Length: 69
Image 1: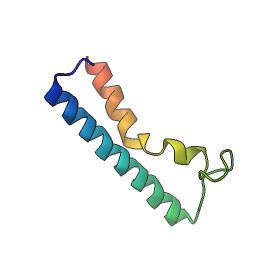
Image 2: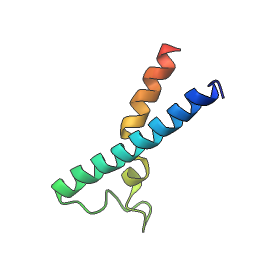
Image 3: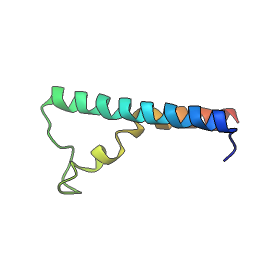
Image 4: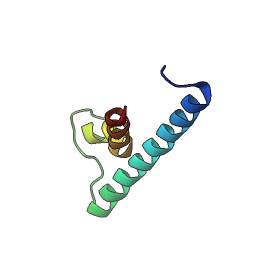
């Protein structure tokens, strides 16, 4: 890892928090739209969008971090 231990801990905790925020945000939008599942590609798992909704906030931050390096 390119991070010092303290930085790695901060990145890990931040990523976990943003992943949860992305998941909750996507769930909020789906509830407001009245959609239970976002697809049927993965039966029992809520659809493909449900597999990646935690990246809703994490991916843009990771792209910004990568571009800044």
